[in-house]
Image 1 (cartoon, helix red, strand yellow):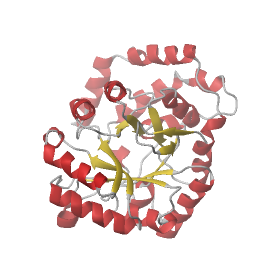
Image 2 (spheres, one colour; image 1 turned 45 degrees about the vertical axis):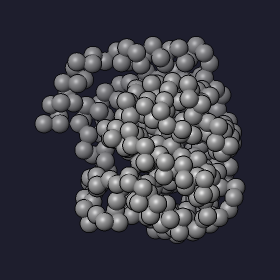
Image 3 (cartoon, one colour; image 1 turned 60 degrees about the vertical axis):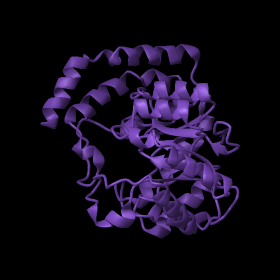
Image 4 (cartoon, helix red, strand yellow; image 1 turned 90 degrees about the vertical axis):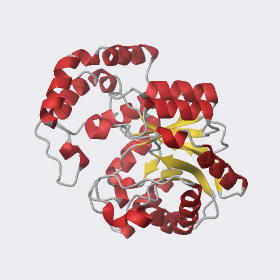
Amino acid sequence: MEYRELGRSGLGVSVVGFGVWTTSTGWWGEYTDDDAVALLREARALGINFFDASDSYGNGRSEEQLGAAFGDDPDVIIATKCGYDFYTHAGARRGQQEIPQDFSPRHIRRACEESLRRLKRDRIDFYQLHNPKMDTISRDETFATLEDLKREGKVRAYGVALGPAIGWEEEGVRAARERDISGMQIIYNLLEQDPGRAHIAACRARGAGVVTRVPHSSGLLEGKYTEDTQFAANDHRRHRPRSWLINGLKKVDQLSFLTEARPGATLGQVALRWILAEPLIASTLPNIYDREQLAEFAATGDVAPLTDGELARVQALYDDNFGIERAVENAQAAGAAR
């Protein structure tokens, strides 16, 4: 396993991390807490030392699972998030529907203390604002509170975690330019490179690190989907237009040259290797569902890095939308959404 520093935070994190949303939310299958703890500990045995949670995942469940698995083990790097006020609005969540946010100093302090209790720790290694909108990025008191928590020793480093439609390009760029963040968590993968490229450029100029989630484009780059794939009723991908799956598979087919050049490597491993070609990216957070997938992703370091020629070829494909007409793709998506 390779380890990289997250910006200038002093945190040395495994390039393959573990997002605990898969074991705590029910959106990727049902896990008992005992199952989750066993999987987390197996990840640690495979060299993964970076685990990412949120207080809102399972209304605290992801943090409780980490606390049960690792407690205050100093060799385990824990990232978590705050901002969704499930304490007040616990009954408002319906599936994956958003609940109200609160980034006031009072709420952040309460959330931090509750997270520390669930994690069984005295300090959070990387504390992130969860999907902040522009008004939060603009609010000095929010970041002053994070600085206070850092000074008090309750937080080692802080940053922002951005969602696809909830705090996007402008929010991320402004956070990197104007706030003293140590890192930024973004969506970034072979098929979804924007606005991640703008975020990476802004973080590079600031000296902040990057953590990427959805590195397999919601499963498309795991190499297991077909046109006949059906998603469970509670799976977020079930609500996407069918064109997302069909056009996504057409794009994935054009990336076969990457696995053909690496006998034995999986598409999922190569997708992580492509992300890690960017040295600013400290860690990736693949969706890990089971032991088999955990072993696959943890072994990414055994796969040869992409060559300059391969990186250029991927970029050319992406810049041309893999030869799929954007107007047609957008029209199909809009029609399906209706």
